[in-house]
Length: 162
Image 1: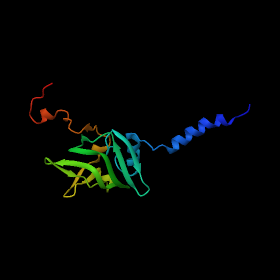
Image 2: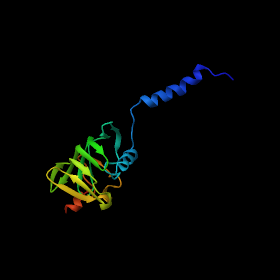
Image 3: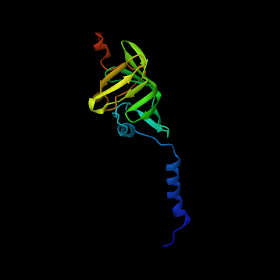
Image 4: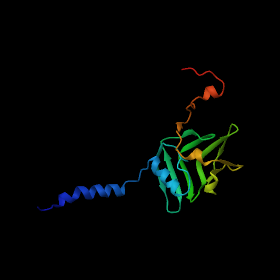
């Protein structure tokens, strides 16, 4: 049986396309990356479209669209979130805000300095807030910007119609 150039062409082109196409990532692969760096896997929502980690440690996470999620407080993710990733921390964060006392503050960093403590530190510039690491084990559901959170009206004492 003789092999022709044509029989090698399809596998070669398929491999070439896989190598040249930009990588896409599911939320599970961003979870694996975070866990490998000593961070909980649920820091980013489940609607991560892709991410890129530069050789200098600069992480860029792309979401389907800006959205709101809730851990202990509400957080807002821009469609692109950037940070410097190192073991135990995301510093120089851009594209993530947290609500505190009805005001929104940009999150500057997320740090796990002592994994045995079970705590994670959110640096919002003016203050640092320690939260239970267990809140961040699973990716949150992130609803499009402007969507009303589930049970919002009931929690605020309003009747919910519909």
